[in-house]
Length: 171
Image 1 (cartoon, rainbow, N blue to C red):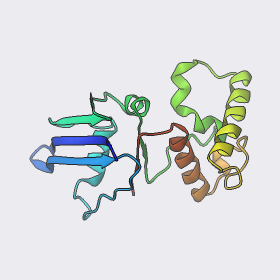
Image 2: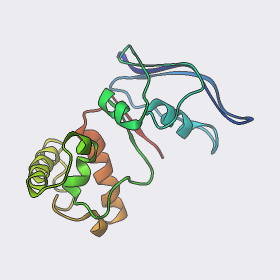
Image 3: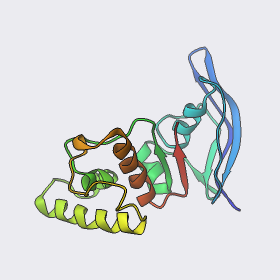
């Protein structure tokens, strides 16, 4: 299996505290890899650096063999590196469908009924493609009405809908 994401010589310090010391690791396409360690070992810090949430002090990051550097998480998502955090990143006042396509908000400014209809249609397609329609409330449901488990599932479906090359499930 080819390496989907490779980190080489990547440290991270917060003032005098060294969170990571020259980490080098590769994540293979199609494989499940666990990052194990005690609290404070730097697992989430590594994920944040790989996903554009945090800048490494130095080192390199390659996605599918291409040197990469992300200024923000959206750039990482566009390159195929997606993170699902322990706490779902959803907007409670938006529907399941609208939350599935939060990454696309910058593509079409404004929010109109036509966009909501388009999101509902696309959400139904994504849920069918991922065989998740039976596991989530209807796409028109406001996220504030969802259980914690359903909110987490919406976040996972959103990540999977992007066809990620690398998917991090942080805790």
